[in-house]
Length: 363
Image (cartoon, rainbow, N blue to C red):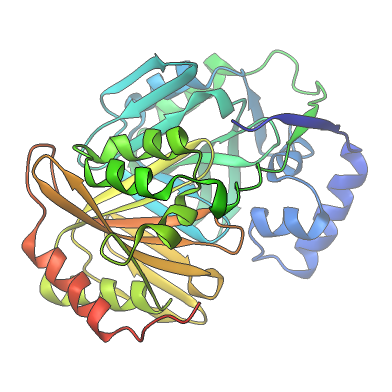
């Protein structure tokens, strides 16, 4: 688990002035990009706008998440630096529990499907911002460093009255209280390949019965995810060129293959399950623009792409897994499958075609 390091401080008034100047030069700049340009976190930008369309809420993400059902249909957004995942739906069926030392949360539905790592959720805000069509209202959640872990935007079908009541109910008593952010320490360096029991790891991989057992397997052998792919053998993990994702999504669209797309960060993984109907490349981004689901993937930041095969009790689960230059997961794609079911043959055929067409990767 990440270890928290030094405290981050800032001057609210100076930052607000700098942010306003930057917005004046580029009014369409996203807050996340503005924060990067200013060298601060996205949450710090919100703090400097408290009272000007931004309301700080209580630091009680779990209770607020449990209230989101009252808003009706909303748009859920989870992203990392390389990929944005947006899904419309209703926040139904929440559950929260401890798994070992981790505080976990789940929303398991056909539309809003989330895996939450609550130990990272810290600050909550309500935002009302002007856009071309009026006002856009949202609830936004941030981790201890000020990074956005999840956002919830109202749609034309949302219950705005319930939103206003929620904001009033959970408004923080001290809107001007200073927030002291902390940086996460750099992740641990991978163990050297030569120090790992690869024959034992391969036997354990071959013996998998459930895809959820893969992460514990990595922990047991103290292996990085991408590191395991580099060393397991091409029968279980095949590196393909980084155009594979665009080709896979185009084929999924053309052949009406239902899939699952996982995108996440340290605090949240968001999942889309279903078809992909409208997609295409534009200026370095591959986009899905469907009525209920949107995906925006910066294809220029994909450093490696792998087709992986993991045994389960029902056979094999095949995935396309994407990583950035730091070896962090960007997105993972599966064929649509429920527990206890076999993988869709059409999905497996699509990945097999992509693997066969992909030029052999030279490390």
